[in-house]
Image 1 (cartoon, rainbow, N blue to C red):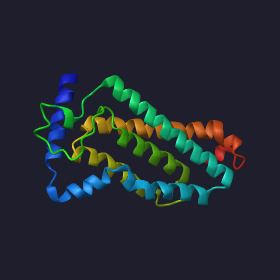
Image 2 (tube, rainbow, N blue to C red):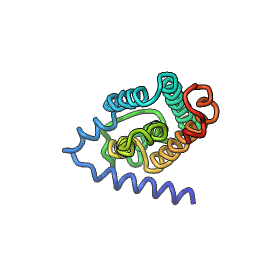
Image 3 (tube, helix red, strand yellow):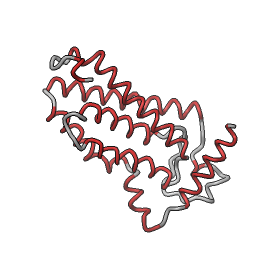
Image 4 (cartoon, helix red, strand yellow):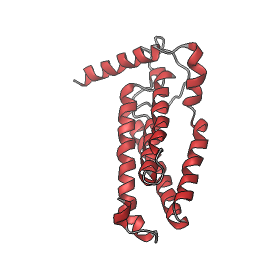
Length: 194
């Protein structure tokens, strides 16, 4: 079963990576770069500061930063424990694929997918009642995750599991915030945040 799943993962990766075209390489190389998204991170911060009282905004921002630290740590330990080579470092397929980036660490699961989905989910849950167009922010993790296949550094399962870890982590941190932090933020009663 695991063998069939890994074969599907490899074959699906080769297929989607092979759809890439040289004229789009620059675009996807920019999309996959974390620094490209700094303006979006700043927008998240500004929205939280503008939409909530100072103390509450501070606690929400600290929760987001705590989530980022958590995701980075979990991703690092999972990659080291699983030890799955990235496609660009796998000899049996790296001559068959398009490789635009060459990281040397491990593949499973995608830190890009986990971090982008977790941050977006948490910020969405914080702001969904105050900013009507918050759902548009999910364009970021979708593009960010897809870019990792395009540039040749992650298999589809890396992306899917990374996204699921991110989504569940964002929800978890939202619940932790409501249960343990919100009552001490001094602004609203916990039941009104739900």
